[in-house]
Structure formats: structure tokens, C-alpha cells
Image: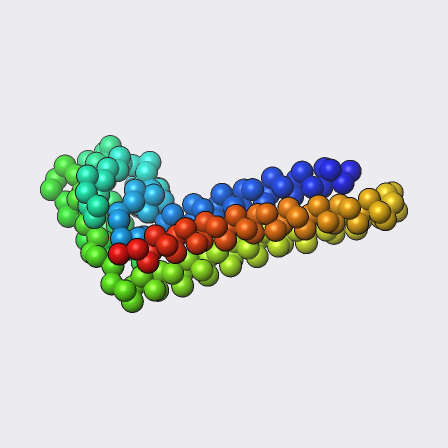
Length: 184
């Protein structure tokens, strides 16, 4: 029973770490990254559709992205979605076949803003991990009548170890992203 609770908590925490890493990837650094653009919602025939489902994305240069739509009729909507997406500062241009996106060089102030943004996202993801821990702790406490207190205490210690491991993974990803952002 304790192992079931810990296994479920481990799976949920691992998913939370993966989501955190994906979330960090959506914050732009000095180089252009296709991951920044994959989830941009494009209004495709009235339905918000992720850009990655509508076009192929290629990065021929450090600050240029080429978006080749599968359906040329979506070209204008793709361009509009990229231009209006917050915290990107991208300037798309459309030549009738592709959308060429260039991003300006990051200023030091903008880099610091992005570091603050990433730290906030990191803290939000740590809160998710702690909430998973709290729910698992409640599940362990609910087993008190069926299992000895020693086993529950051991389960609590294992849960704390698990939580620390996953919070550390988020911290490591956060440090890596901060280093990327501050690199000139």
C-alpha cells in the first residue's frame, strides 16, 4: 500500500518536472529555438491550433526561424499569431510561401526580466511538486489503522527524499536556463 502511494507520487512528480522543463524551453534566450514557437496558438479555421501542427520549423541561423506552413492559406494567421505572441518580440515577414521570423538581440535588462520570469515559473512548478507530496502524505496518514506507525514514518521519509530529488531536478533545469539567458 505504501509502495503504491510512493509510486503514484513518483510518476506525478516526474511529469511535473517534465512540464517544468518544457515550460522553461518556451522562454527565449539569445538564440532562436523552435520549441519557443511550437505551442503558439494559431487561429486555424476558428480553432486555436499549435503552430507545430500547422507548419515545419527550421532554424538556419542563430536569430532566424523559417516557418513553412503545410497549408498556404494559413500563412496570414501564422504570421499574425507569431507577431502578437507575448514575451517574444519576434518580427515575422511573409513572402507568400514561408514566414521568416527574426528575433532582436536581447538587452541586459530584457535578460534579467526573463530570468525573473523563469524563476517565477520554477517556483510555480515546485509548488506543484509540494502539492503532490501533500496529497501523498494525506494518503499515507489515511493508512494509519491498517499499517504500523514505523512503516508510515519510513514512507514519510521516502516521500521527503522523493520530493527533494524532484525539486532539485527543477532547480538544476532552472540554473541551466538562467545560465543560457545570461550568456551573451
